[in-house]
Amino acid sequence: MTSEFSQIFYDMRMTETGCQNCFSSGLQQIYEIQRVPVHSVILLETRQQALEYPTGDICLVCCPQCGFISNSSFVSGLQEYHGEYESTQSYSPTFDDFSRSLASKLIDRYDLRGKAIIEIGCGMGEFLTLLCELGHNRGIGFDPAYLRGRVKSRADVQFIKDFYSEKYAHYKTDFLICKMTLEHIADPAQFVKMIRRSLAGSPDAVIFFQVPDTTRILREVAFWDIYYEHCSYFTPGSLARLFRQNGFEILDLRREYADQYILIETQLRTGETEGPLALEDDLEAIQRDAAFFKEKIEFKLEIWRGFLSNCQQRNARAVLWGAGSKGVAFLTTLGVFDEIEFCVDINPHKHGAFIAGTGQEIVSPEFLCTYQPEVVIAMNPIYREEIGRSLAHLQIDAELLTVKDIPHD
Ligand SMILES: [Zn+2]
Image (tube, rainbow, N blue to C red; front, side):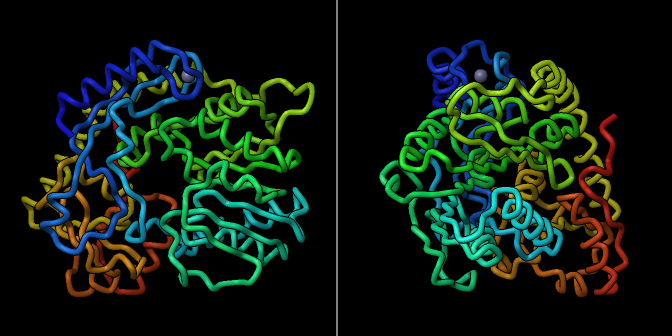
């Protein structure tokens, strides 16, 4: 995509379509970065392929009316979701504990026993299978990137390798899940309207969505959490407003996973509804947080660039731990090529592949025994303990940092 094209597209979005959450105009720009890989968790076989991977631009804009933040330069046709798309996190015990506890809570709260469950964007089907296993439910998972065989198959769980749409409305459901998917959708209001229409035959269904929380991204100036695949960025308030404006009532809204995720439970509105929850009242805070991000971002990038170039100058080998989207965004935003040679990941399906954009090779934790890094940068602070234990087990004496450890003040 040329920058001229993205500029035209950006102007068109700003003036003609406005906010994709509430359709207001007057969006305010927060952040801009050009030529980032259009996919960050795609497996690339050679360094050359990785370096030449297609790129797009990011221009984050914020809607003053509803607080929704989106990439106004996003062009959806640039992306393809298929079998080489590797986004599973389920090799981490920390993540598995969270999934298991969430599944149990949902089963208890909504009596999900012997029920019909649909999951939109089910990935490899880990969570849906877990819900069906624990509650003896029947599941249908939708995901164009689903791969058979990653999760042990069960007779009561079926997978459809497609995007969910109204053509599947004949599948009745008691519980509809959509985790870590809405942030990939450029027109969330249209998507939620489509779900409402699809639920015509299941009016009592409970709808559960989980998305990353942008409040934290803005407050931590977490540039590694902003990447091309995520074109839509929510806070608790903007997510709740999206559902309320489209005929849903909010049953519950909360943050989990060290405040990294927003979880919302909703249902089609049938009559009078209760007023907004305290967590929804965040419009002013979003404006403040967005201004803070805008003010601090350049300084934060400089600190990290300085740190990594200092490591290189003193021949201190640094590696990233976490070759997912955060790792890719960290490297491509900073423009790190030679300063870091390798990225570690515990997912064996990624080993030997290369990072889109900057070309680092993805290696196993065991590789570090020969490489002997002096600095390990954990891309997600929630895995710090887990990574520390792995390093100790491998007898690697390296300084363990997380992306949060370097202050932005
Ligand atoms: Zn809006």
